[in-house]
Image (cartoon, rainbow, N blue to C red; front, side):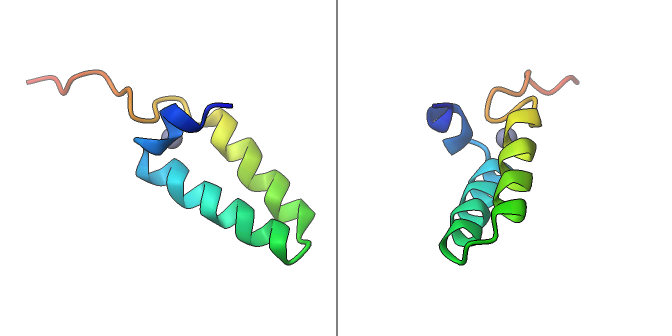
Length: 52
Ligand SMILES: [Zn+2]
């Protein structure tokens, strides 16, 4: 759903991979944890320009 925005965010990419890995091994609590973190990640790749 929010894959496009997450793709630009290294942290979200890591979380997505972690979530998929957790799913593969049936670790649903960890997968849910990653999903929550992904949703909460506020800035993704749309960070406001750095301020001088
Ligand atoms: Zn993110």
